[in-house]
Image 1 (cartoon, rainbow, N blue to C red):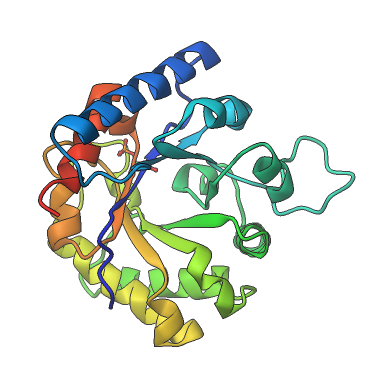
Image 2: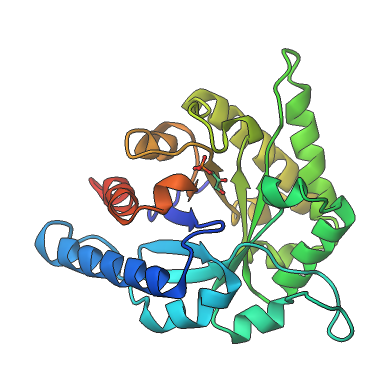
Length: 262
Ligand code: 13P
């Protein structure tokens, strides 16, 4: 498996911040801090070093001001262009400035997203060549490791409509539901064993060469203290960060720490 050299660090803002003014201020402040770090202390920091999944309505505005990161959506719809009230489809968010989309977050699944709907969203998003972050994760763990087989099955089912030459646009985020929004993250060992299972599922679907193109992230109680360990010991190519991406200093600290000593 090819280890990525540049970590993919994605903030999931969820329903924050409350206003566009705050969102723009956040991105401008973050960009200023990163630009300064790049000139002063971390010359190896890439020009664009973060991804931010924002509320859709903020995307075009943030795209205008974000020079050091990518802006994306937290969910899309898999319905067709036409008569579907209240839905936002990939062509709309792409033309509004989105660089990527998250699909299948456990909080969206909990609001009733079906596996069928998820498979359609992923297929449509990838057909549109949108970088697509598919979230998977178990609710609980059992001693026999059944959750690993269930995760593999979830990946296979959700990607069943996707052609393998679109895998280069696919990212999978492993987010154990029990670790989201809590105090205890998965251990790097627990993360590593799931990464192997996910790679196995991808290889079974599309062959090893295509499976290798997929980036895998970890999410669930990522903090400034544990962020780098998932990349160094957990076998992932990056992180999907909730609460710690909603505070500009904390998010900056994570970005810088994950890029140090490259
Ligand atoms: P926390 O980092 O707040 O646990 O949230 C994780 C998450 O849901 C990212 O998508």
